[in-house]
Length: 171
Image (cartoon, rainbow, N blue to C red; front, side, top):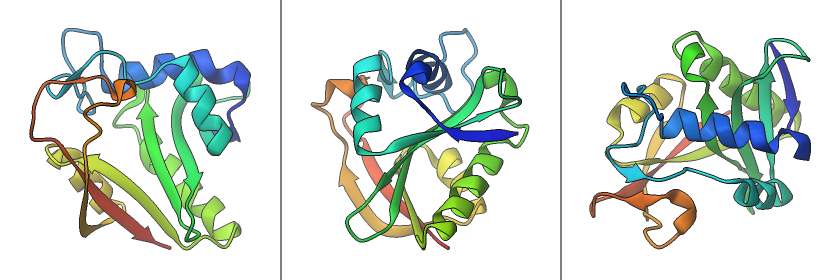
């Protein structure tokens, strides 16, 4: 597995990967699919370009010349923690350890940069996903954030009871 920071040349491939992971266009949704909660694309090229200006995307490949298999956005926060978002793994590789290895690499890089906390937010109704993060060392902070209902970049919400649950991983 090879990890590197994404470049502008990776944006189209990242858009495809993230949209497929979260809004799987196939008949049978994967376990990371959000189609029962939101519809429409999860991201687009303009959003990713903007996000890369304030942070970066870590990508994982099997080899240098192979397609991107997994990714995560990393954004430094004012208190020194790293906020991790848009964690995505190609559907065909889900369940093979790519997500775990990606998080392990993010934690390794954080420690090397003297960062001691990783943060994420997860939609409250995604209990299976929250449990997956908890098995990897994240803990619920007890805090929530309002869901960004009026942000077109997240898609069109299909429910009115969405909230973002905050989790942290102490390193």
